[in-house]
Length: 90
Image (tube, rainbow, N blue to C red; front, side, top):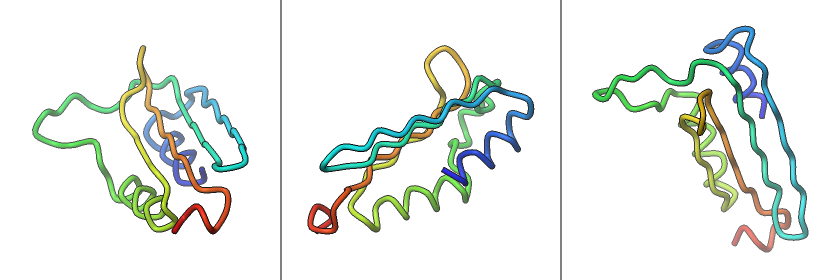
């Protein structure tokens, strides 16, 4: 969450940011969305900086899932699902 919020501040200054946490028995689901301009439309360059790569690697390290990219209707969306129990990560 910290990295996603830092990215929103850096790439969409002044944008509103929504943070959602959903904790269930099996997983923690995190969703961070800003209403900024979204990623630049550069087809030759994927929207994957070092911060996003690090978030993806950290989620995978615990058996979780990670997605990031343009949000429907504009802005940028970061989502992660992380196992809530150590047994679920195996």
